Image 1 (cartoon, rainbow, N blue to C red):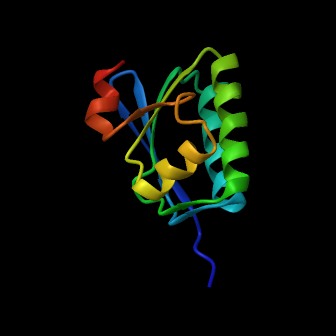
Image 2 (tube, one colour):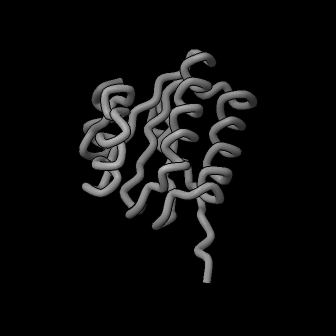
Image 3 (cartoon, helix red, strand yellow):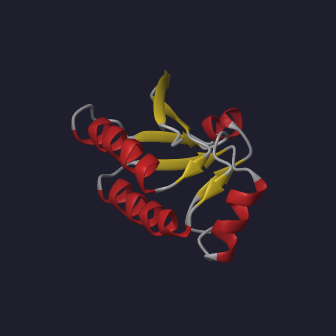
Length: 116
């Protein structure tokens, strides 16, 4: 049985906190996430985003490249992105891919929000 990814958004001041609910961050969950994020950026004018990945247990290697493309698109749009809630397996995947320094990573939402 395939798990369906979902995205929820909570507005905290001028920051949009985006939570991805999917155990596996694969192409399908990435599609759900990017559709929502691009809508927020292009249609809603969102400029500060915290992406909480605490429910994600596994990051597929294909998703690393997709995440990189997402980060570039967000920056081109003049937005700021912070990641938080990374489980050790997800953090390790970013480290192996040598992408951990590309993203601003925080332990939890409170820490990420504090940096804005």
